[in-house]
Amino acid sequence: MADKKANVHVVPHPDGGWATRRAGSERVSGRHETQQQAIDAGRPVAKRDHVEFLVHGRDGQVRERDSYGNDPFPPKG
Image 1: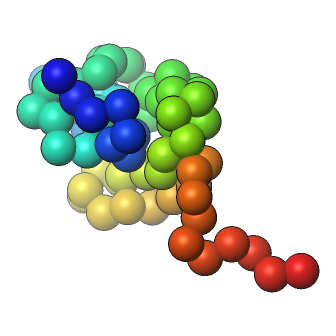
Image 2 (image 1 turned 90 degrees about the vertical axis):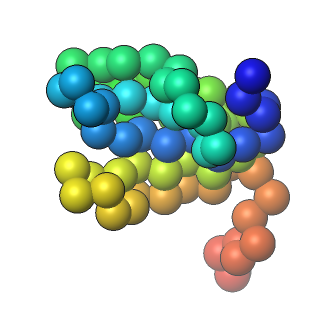
Image 3 (image 1 turned 180 degrees about the vertical axis):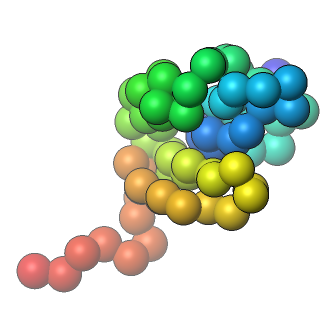
């Protein structure tokens, strides 16, 4: 079972499409046809659990990151 405090990632699914996955989990939380559908499914989970939300590109590199928990670098001002 995935740790509820683990970050949520949107990653390419090996069989095509996109998946949401908890950090450290071997299984995907959900499989989606488009990246946007995966983002729309994963972001509320990250907000609910107060964790980081990371979106990966097709190359596996993180292209977007949002913090919904204890942000170690909060914005100033």
